[in-house]
Length: 192
Image (cartoon, rainbow, N blue to C red; front, side, top):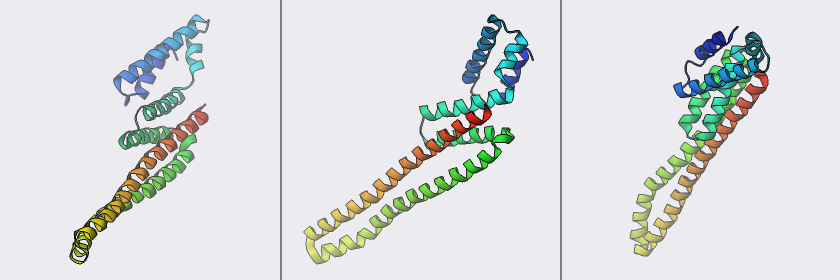
């Protein structure tokens, strides 16, 4: 395979990439091949020394997922990176068992932690709704001072529920990010 064929094949493999990212990657491999030719490799040797197109593109995709995860940390970005990893995993039969295990871990952690977030969030809402008759009864029985005291206690409970929901949500995002980053490392090791 010559340089032009390699670059064209790589361009096809990276079809779903952002145009600017793809341009940078293709320029890098163009330059890499040119440097190898300057060191005395033939064009075919320079291209062969880089590796198979599938392996090169799998490595690039894994690197890109890792870069995107370090730049951004929102749940939607993790989701996009997750689907990119799934494509990489199922493109290589060697990585298929790793992909299946990764899917199981990713979904079980996601469902468990997000259900905790939902539970604590709903706990805060239910506490707020249930507090209305309690505060009214406290006002009737204890006067304004008792109602303010009961309201304060209820607000502390609601705040605790809401804070727990937020903390667990943040931990969920960080944990999912760590799982995806760990998988990227495994993909890199297996694809070499």
